[in-house]
Length: 164
Image 1 (tube, rainbow, N blue to C red):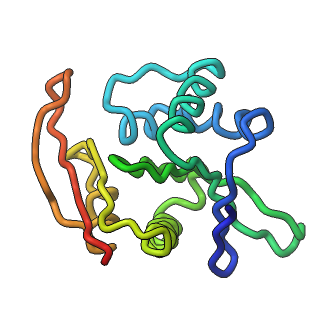
Image 2 (cartoon, rainbow, N blue to C red):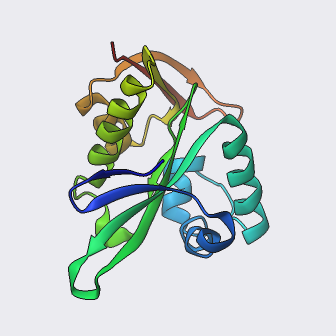
C-alpha cells in the first residue's frame, strides 16, 4: 500500500529496481555510523539485498520518495520499515536530511498503524550518539523505554509510542 502526504510518499519497495539507490546509501560511512553503528563496513549490493529480504519477512519496507515538480517525477531519498519491534529509517540523500522528511514519514506510519489497529509502535536500537534520530522519535511522541549496550559495547536506546 502506498502512503502519501503532500509531496512525500512511501511506496512499497521494488527490490530489483530500488536496490541501486540503496546501495549508494549503505556505502556511506556517515549513514552507516548512525543506522548500523560506528565501525560498520560499507555494504555490498548483496548485503543490501539480504537486508531488504530480511526486513520484508518481518514488516513492510518502503522507499521514501519526494516529488520533484520540475522533472514531474518521484525521487527516492531513503527507506523505512514498519515492523512490530522496529522502525528503521534512513534519509540517504544528504540534501534531504534535516528538512523534516523523517518526521513526515514517522507521522504517516503512525496513522497507518493506527488504521491497522496497532496499539503501539516500537523503535529499537537507536545509538545514543544519534541525536537527530532520538529527537525525531521524541518529537513524534515516542518515549524512551530502555537503555542498553549492543554486542559491540555501544550505548543504545529503545523507544515506544502508544497510538490508541
